[in-house]
Length: 118
Length: 107
Image (cartoon, rainbow over all chains, first blue to last red; front, side, top):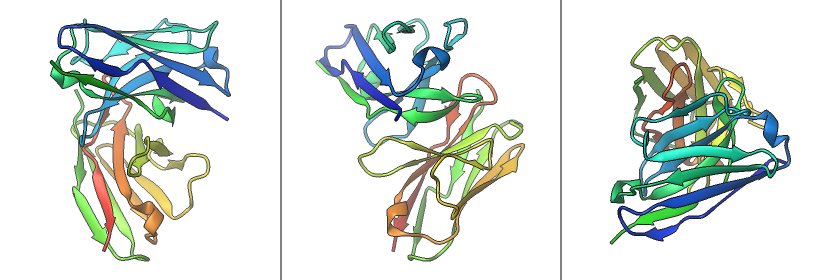
């Protein structure tokens, strides 16, 4: 079965950087685009970024463009999100999700919590 | 950016009642809408894509419809396990955007 396991979250100070990972299993990772989505405590869902299966297309939300970088290692079935210059507003649960069809999100991980606090 | 507006914010219904959740897009998005269910403490789960196509394993008491700017998700007979927040999402244009969610509660 499809499994997505995020890791790398934690408590960090404003202005610092963090790398999130998402290990995929149960499907042919190299054939699917992948998304990152976040959810601040008690808030709704915010889409952040997508990377095509072959990295030919990468798109970002305006709120993270220039600070966050999505990438992938198809040889290891891992998705990454490199986050820099973090602010308190970046505190959230970060989910990776598989791109289904025309960019709906058909499978989601359990999320990893990032807390940005001084 | 395409803004997705969901209403109502909260629905409080008795078991067995039907529920209609609305989602309005700020621009014509054809049928490029998905719906997700997020139960308390869980990750979101895909319910519907292309407005009305159910995802794998979704009970047939869930149905979706709409095109253009107006979309609805209908639960035909509410069960306790349907307590959740429901989100619509457009994938017509980047950036992808979600609605603010409708919380479904049991009276």
